Every structure is written in C-alpha cells, then in structure tokens.
Length: 124
Image (cartoon, rainbow, N blue to C red; front, top):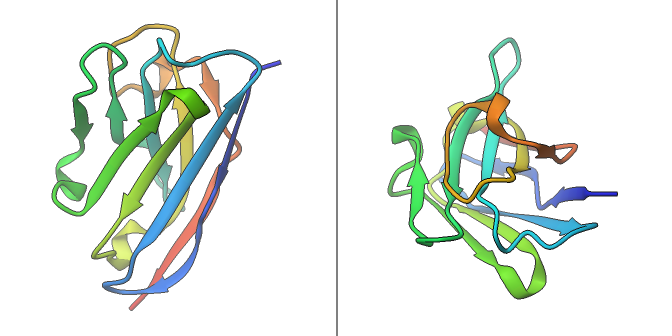
C-alpha cells in the first residue's frame, strides 16, 4: 500500500520559515515526479512546487518563487519543501503528491498518490 506522510506544518509569524517533509512508503518513488500542493479554506487545491525525476529541475508557482525551495532525496524516498519569508496568504493545508510519470505537471487530476496534508498557518 502506497503512503505519503507529510510533517512539519505549524503556526509561524509573517516572515518566518517552515520546513515540510513528505515520506513515501509502499514503493520506490525515485522515478516519479513529486510535488507539493496547497488548499486554503474555500479555495481549490493548487500547485505549489514540483520536481522531475529525470531533470531534477524544480518548478514553482509564481507566488512562491524565490521564497520556497523543493528538493528530494531519492535514497530516503523523501520530498522536502523549505518555505521562507512566509506570508498570511500562504496559510493552507499543504499536500504531498506523486505521479506515475516522470515529468512535473500542475493539475491535481494528474497525480496518483496523495498524502493527508499538513496545516500551515501564518499569522500577521
């Protein structure tokens, strides 16, 4: 059974930092694209960042460029998201996702595996 388990969420003030971790189990994900999504109350789930297995090139939504860094450790089957200079509008539940293909895409429907999410709250 495939599992993605996120951790690292919490409450921080504006300008603070958080580091999210996603540990994958049940299969090896070192040939899969993986990504972080987020969903704020009353909004649709949106792509935040993703990384390709083939190129290792990261992709970011414009809102987080320069502030967030995605990385992965294939040996540990783990995905990370370092979030700096956090803003109140970053408040959301953050989800880890993986897809069977190797390239990063931004649509939620193209991802095959999802974690349960971790809450990130930024106070103003």
